[in-house]
Image 1 (cartoon, rainbow, N blue to C red):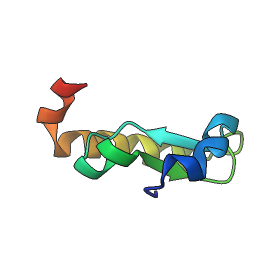
Image 2: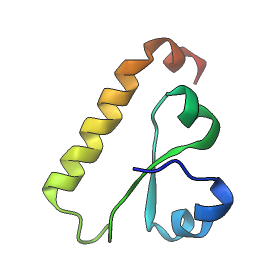
Image 3: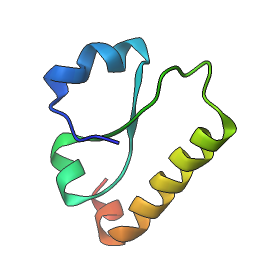
Length: 69
């Protein structure tokens, strides 16, 4: 996971090389939160499960922010 300025990762996001995680955290709300892995096609079940876990866990950190979406 990394917090990056959009101008540094816009091409990778558009190409599908990076995936944005919808995580309502204060820092992420301003910059975005991404999970970086080598290839979407070769994503293992473990990485996919970890990505889901992170998204769910981060959502629970700030439940009040979900109403702002």
